[in-house]
Each structure stands twice: as C-alpha cells, then as structure tokens.
Image (cartoon, rainbow, N blue to C red; front, side, top):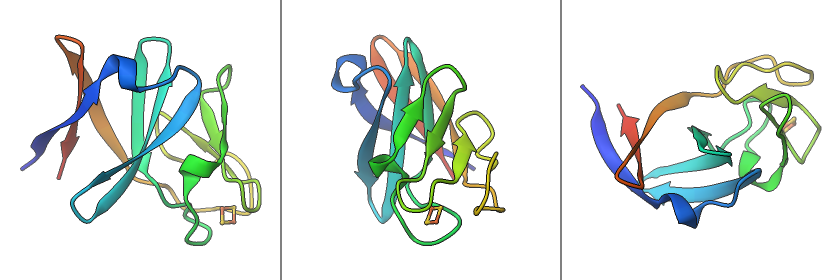
Length: 105
Ligand code: FES
C-alpha cells in the first residue's frame, strides 16, 4: 500500500536542480526537469551521502553524487557509473492541479 504525499507547488522546485525534502523519517531528493519530476531517496548507495548536494545532468537525466562522483539514472535509480553499484529507491510522482505529489510505500 502506498500513501500519496504532497511535496508542494511546482513553482517550489527550480528546473534542472535537486531539492532536498524531508517527509517524516524520510529524506528525499526531488529533481525537476522542465515539467517532469523525479523523486529518489536522498542517499547515495555507495556511502551515506545526500544526492541533493550533487549536480543534475539535464540531458542525460542523471544526478551525480558530490562525494565520489557516482551517477544515477533519475528514472530508474540505477547507478550508471562507479563507485556505486546499488540502486537508489525511486518513487512515483504526479502533478495534480499544480501540486507535486509522491507515492510513498
Ligand atoms: S558516497 Fe556517493 S559516490 Fe561515494
């Protein structure tokens, strides 16, 4: 079962950038690319480091960990470069009436 959680209005999120969002015990990273949104756990799978501090590669739809440079696919959460080898959890996002919502387990 999933819970739909409001993240805020679309205008709260800068296009091409990563935003850290805390929801209860969870810390998420929200990435906006144009009108598309991606939500992942804000934790690199290599070591415990926030992905929200990294750079977003808009063309490749990836986020790069600031610590050691691993890159993750924003759609799948899979690493596309070392040193990370494990997936980062991703969550389904929808925009309803200008509000960004995420489905959390
Ligand atoms: S902590 Fe992210 S690549 Fe090492």
